[in-house]
Length: 182
Image (cartoon, rainbow, N blue to C red; front, top):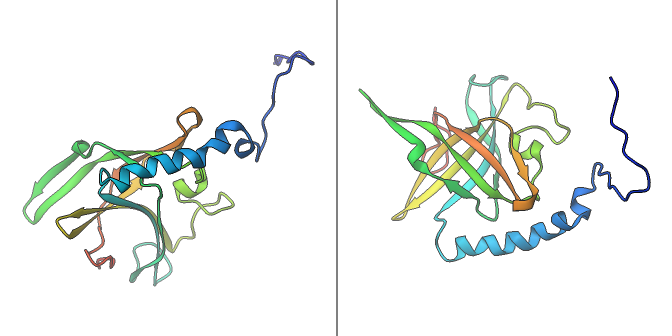
């Protein structure tokens, strides 16, 4: 298979690991983040979005007692595209929400590994740990916590100065006090 050869001396730019943050778009990211924070300051984004890691006491996911080991608030607060994509399924014991949402305007300071719930070296979490997103809604003083999992691959959109992550509704929301159920 032949490869297209780039003409030398024409001023083309190759980019490698670590170059992004040194380029103009990468340098402008923190400025855009400051502007985006205005949405939260004026009360237009009345929720908090968190990445949560938990550990199970018996050595594998779902076994034993779940405890929170890391909780990271995503700042500035990202935009949630439409909660109307969540469907309420009425059952004999209550209502289950199904569907997904899209988070956009996530700061470019995050890495794909962080947003996907991987270890810093790109490997999967240990078998006794879990990763999910949690959106905490503040409604008339009450905390409403909803758990989501990553649906697909986080997408970097450099010319929009953002990451975009699709999320799928998950079960097992934490209690209003932030304690895992179980």
